[in-house]
Image (cartoon, rainbow, N blue to C red; front, side, top):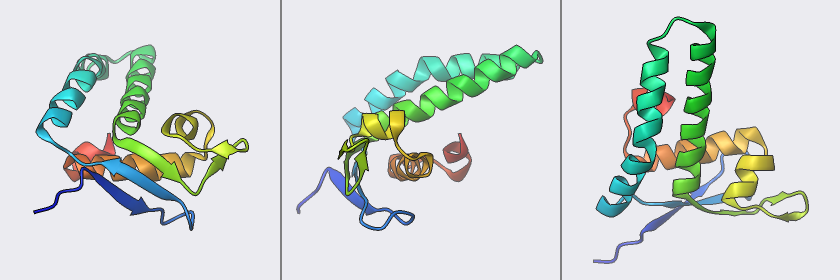
Length: 121
């Protein structure tokens, strides 16, 4: 048996762009859970609030969780330059096209095995 710990995904919205996504393993799942745990607790607490500021804070935490997922699972971006340099996961998140960020994020979340409802977050 041969197992590849990284999966390559072709972009559907940007021809020639490819994402290398880390596949889920036991150790990687534990690492991801540890990183997301505290943010998820804070988000749940804030979502229970009724104040506009709490709702905004909850949305901000959700965005932070999405960035964390991308940085955790996106190993490489090929076929894309951001500001004249080869794209990296960090440059995609910081300065790259938002539609490609969202596509890469969806590929990472799909690889984690999250359900459809969980992927929405």
